[in-house]
Image (tube, rainbow, N blue to C red; front, side, top):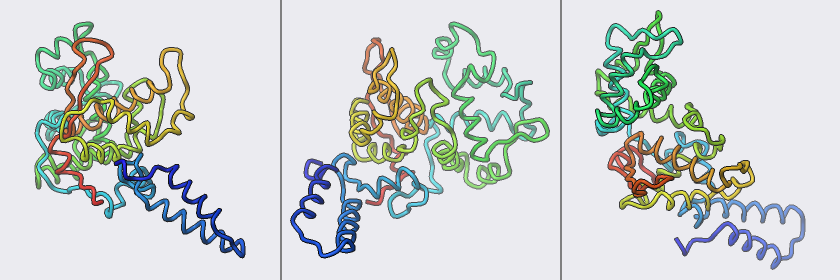
Length: 308
């Protein structure tokens, strides 16, 4: 990537062009500026790892309406080990034909949450996660809680006559193409509708969610081998340095620590790993904070294609 210009390099070239030429009118200056700006927007940048500003703008704002840049598979066979599909399978099987009666607060029933958590976590992790208290509500099994919200936002699950039911769209997709057919719906709903900051206590930082496809681009480009989480955190910080002016420093974390932590948990753990597109391997050996290595999984290349 060292051969690509930085944003500052391009700005310096624009200034050099303007200083080296004489212009006969304001219209000529504006026309030249428009031409140079367009060239700048279409030029790959080092800080964007080969993406141009115009391409980055599309990834941030219209990723599902930019087929010239990124495409998503409609029908494919996602791994049955993808956490999001494991959870959705548990939920859809419990709903079945009769539906699932919610609690008085409108959440999934306690018994289902306990049984699903044991199935999802396994005996050892279940014991660890409940050592300070049993699962008394859906909120105690937060992975399922978030999955249920995403599934509703995706139009796959809804409440009907006092019960959670699968929608007609959901049943049709599963019947025709199997459980993996709902994966794209869950993915799009998570990216576009579910508020990622809901899962943690960090500041909002909307750009982290908006840049989700940029992270998948990076994982596809560099994720063939395990790399430390800091590798992707560094790229994110370098690509969007203006973030430091947009968040508040706290008494317990610097701005950089806040951005790094929020980026890692929201994008790499709660998104890429949750959707089965990345594998995280802990390398901190019991120290805190926990540190991880990251690599892509085959599902990423199967589902997302960047056409650069």
